[in-house]
Image 1 (tube, helix red, strand yellow):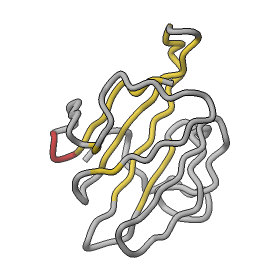
Image 2 (spheres, rainbow, N blue to C red; image 1 turned 120 degrees about the vertical axis):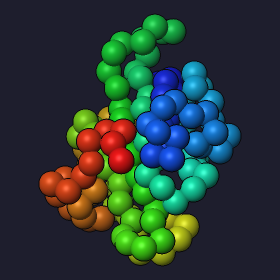
Image 3 (cartoon, rainbow, N blue to C red; image 1 turned 90 degrees about the vertical axis):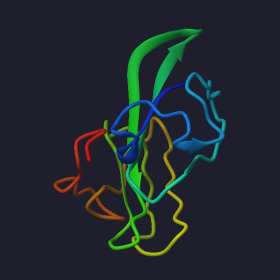
Image 4 (cartoon, one colour; image 1 turned 45 degrees about the vertical axis):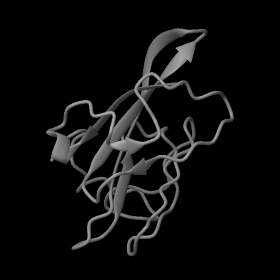
Length: 126
């Protein structure tokens, strides 16, 4: 997997390498590897990884978004259904969102413990 894009609403939905602390565009995630990514603000943050075959991108994308606003509930979503979003806390900061790429989502933007994506924004939207 290769990190091939990050966005933040405050960055006007453009690639912003400073959105996520410690991870740059092009970072290669190895099979079975666990990493932690921290968004630098409480706004909506988005990222996507592309599956690789050898060193070549396959076009299979794992897209996810999350937010940890001070005035409403925490939310996250895996946009392809196989991003593997796990259950998370709707309230409190900091919040940890866990994504197991290749697994089915068990939580969504509209629900921290079930699949209800009716209220989720489009990937990269405000």
